[in-house]
Image (cartoon, rainbow, N blue to C red; front, side, top):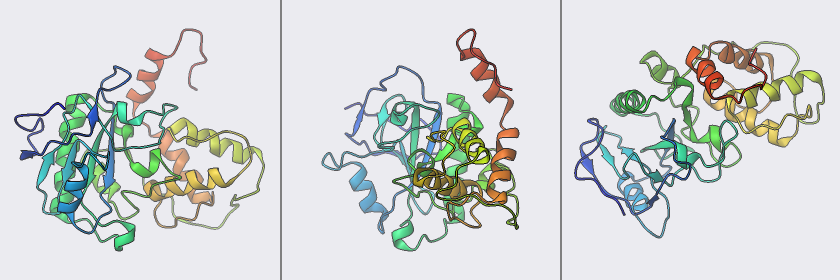
Length: 271
C-alpha cells in the first residue's frame, strides 16, 4: 500500500490511508472527477468502511458535513469507488478518475440537503484537482452518470448548478417542463435513435438501437437526475431532449479539440 505523509490537495487537512488501492491500469493520468455520496447515516463509519480491507471500497478524498476533508488514496493511484461503470465508451472508470465521497446519508436516509460549508469545500477541491490534472468541465460527473443501473448518487438535490457557477463542471439551465411529444418504453422511431445517439455522444453508456427499452429509460433517468432534476421519470419529454441538445451544443470547445487531436486519422470528424 502506498501512503502519503501529507495531503496532495491544500483543501484536505489530513491523510487517513486506505489499503484499497492499486495501479491505474491504462497508464493514463486521471481525466474524470467522480462525485459520490457515502449513503451511510454516520460519516465516521463511512470513513471506517472506506479504509476497511474487507469492504474493498475506497476513494481519494472524503468531505465531511462540516467541510473537513481527508485524503485516503494517492491521486496517482487507482481508488476503488466507481465499480461496474462506463463513460465515453471506457469501462474502467476507476483507472481514469479521482473519486470524491461526500458525507450524506443518501436516498435511504432521506437525502438531506448538503450543508453550505460542505459544498463550498467540494467546489474548492474540484477546482484544485481540475487545475492540477487538466480535467475538462464535462468530465466532472456523478456516480449515477457512470453507473445508471446501479447508483443514484450524489442525487437530485446535489447543486450541480452552484458548482457550475463557481467554475466546476458543465451545466446548462434546464428547459422548463412543458407539453409535447414524449417517448417511453416500447417506442421505436428516429427521434428515439437520435436521443440515444446524443446520450452516447455526451458519454453515457447508451446503446443506439432506435428502440426505447428499459436500459434507455435508466440512462434517461440518470441524465434527468443530474441535468433536469425537476422530474425524474425516465421519459424523454421535450424538456429532457432539449436540455440534452443544449448541453451538447454548449460543451467546452476543448472537448472537441481534444477528441480531434486523439481521433485516428481518417475517422469522420465531429459535425
